[in-house]
Length: 156
Length: 376
Image (cartoon, rainbow over all chains, first blue to last red; front, side, top):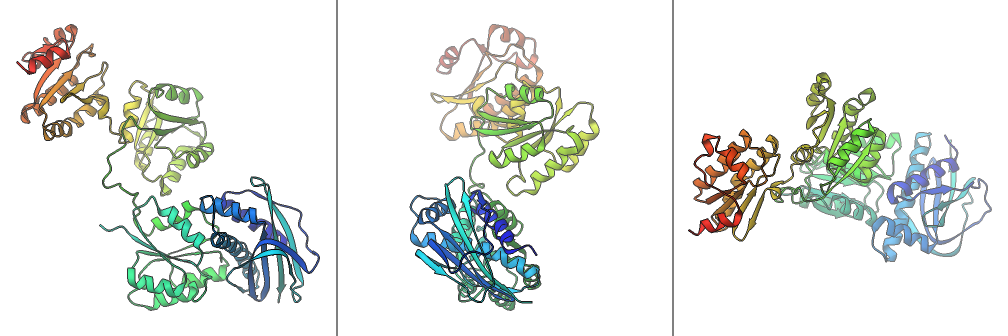
């Protein structure tokens, strides 16, 4: 199985390219980021449970979340509900693709439904998850970046 | 027949919105449910022709919903297409065993969704049963794929007088990109592209829901009869032989696109139907005009008018097929009691005298003269 960061680095651009026509470029990433990690803005999360457990966060600036929502749904002024829905669904797709690869690698697991929170300096830590990766993804067209943070524990 | 019903069961408003947008151009009835419980209720109430089902949802997930659908004798035959981010092999196998028609993995393109749904239900563009064909005066996109730039250029030049956008390329890879960016109304493709690329490209066109009815004409040298037969066998709309008769090309393409070309020849002015026969009219052109005789004359009478002028002033050389066309028009006028007059140049009148079929007709030298004669 590829490492966690490589999988996410492949999934994130694919999801944004296919669903929103947006090209995103992964930065180098960090496989041992500082913990607790902090996130800002509109943050979607989806949990994994089973032989692979953990959680994936995707953090957008409010402006990026709005622009991505407009790209997907059209219009000019999306509602908070629409923005949350798009952020949640994109997080679901990124995590769902990760889950598929974990399952194929022998770590069957289930997905939670997405949750979305808003705020600054959201501090997150998953004490029982030895794996933690963090990366930013740059949107050339929007001149903005997305942060993805994932915690995971794999049980043989 | 009622439009087919599609039920989407997904907790994401974004997915519902994309499904709504994707199917907006088609004549379908869309229903949405936010979870498995609502989905089961909607399925029982609406009896949809297909269900598009997510997996991860609150209240009741897609797997449980699918189990209940398959366990209900009145609902089990409704085809289900899964639309989910979960694509692990075991997961797909488990769900496939429960009896789903198809499995679409998120992220997905609108095109992929429509194509997969179109395999289950008969999708028709909105209004296809009632709207008239596009007219020759409407815009259209013509895609030309020929390995010889000079052929592409000559086709482009010959169509320059038409309101059509002509895009050309020398190879199929670029053509595929052009098609996704600028969907054509017709494709002209050289049958001598390397590695039988024209045949593969044709199959690709036909396999896509959006282009399965797109007219495709092969371009081939006259003597290459084997490749022409091959392309006709697999279903090409037709073949245009090289050297291409560029004078006739707009009409051929218009015919292949099933465009309404009548405005080129038929016009009602001051309650009189004018039928204009252009100079150099080909057999195909005459056939085009003949095809509109019945609807045009019938429509004239239905509108309370009964006069027609057949304007032959542009015709420099009278051909047998033109005489047949004139006689067809005259016969139709007589059967509907439409008064008709012929207008032609002196040269035309002299040529017409040589044909027995034309000797009974008085040919006026101007439309004004012919119009005045109606009132005598």
